[in-house]
Image (cartoon, rainbow, N blue to C red):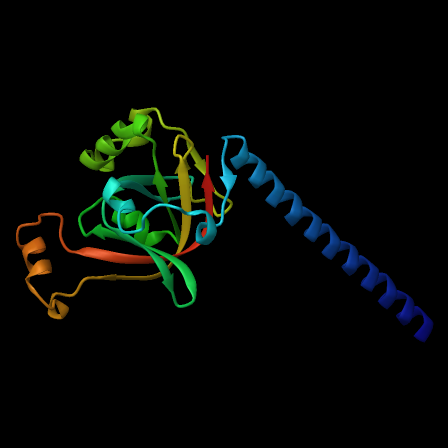
Length: 209
């Protein structure tokens, strides 16, 4: 009886070890496939803490594209407000979305979002995304953009020159009772889109081409 039990225990241990090795091999293979899928669009993975050379005080002034959602449905919008730096020991990127923007519902539901930069030849993308609403139709399709997804299922467009993926760490709307001067009061006095929500994301991936 004892010999049989030991034999069964050894067999079980061997099978468990094989299962673990198989799962590890699958994870490695899947990661490789994802990397290859992104590389086929001409992107290379970068470390933003070392390879991001733009002026952080000027980058968002050029306008970038924010996207959120999943493979079922997503939306993107042009943004001109944002911040990059370090928060809570993490490489962080902050974006702001007004209450009535269509993209906000996607930002509130999704765990991840992407911020994209486009070259001068695609200025029409930023213009269109910033003046049209996704409620009225598929903006990406109207522009002929090609949607792809990160390993986390976050949407981005292959026409972008830079893609930064973030995982939301904090989200909250601005509270008027904490306004310290007239600047935010003037901003929202006649602003029909409503107060902005701040989304602070940890940068979990970045690609450039």
